[in-house]
Length: 158
Image (cartoon, rainbow, N blue to C red):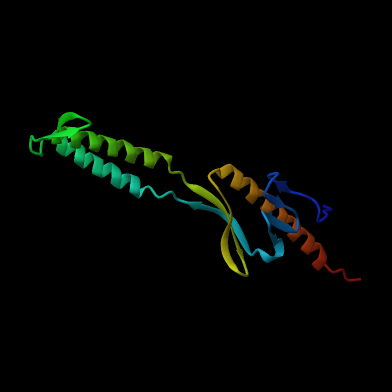
């Protein structure tokens, strides 16, 4: 297979370009020979804040529903409301907000590379398919580099 250094194996049309010799991310250029390892990294979403808010909401709503607070009335926007009803509604609101936070937080995916400077996430996205396309292009590029190097290291004896 004959390849030139200008051949583009993958581009997203904006920031990412993979050629048989380089991996370009925005303004950073990595030589393929300088990349010792690459792969997909999954960055798990942190859902703990949403879970804590949701549990707090369940506790407050449960306390209000169980009438754990005195029957004292509180003025809210000019209306008298019991403390139990107020805590019930606050708890339901916190519960809904906690569920909302848990649902909207998504895992992120990265193209993780190792170079002489260390490991880093070169490209990060919420779309796994996008990252998979970049990794597939890098795999093809490394195959071309290996193929080219194998041709250079072959010697013939007469």
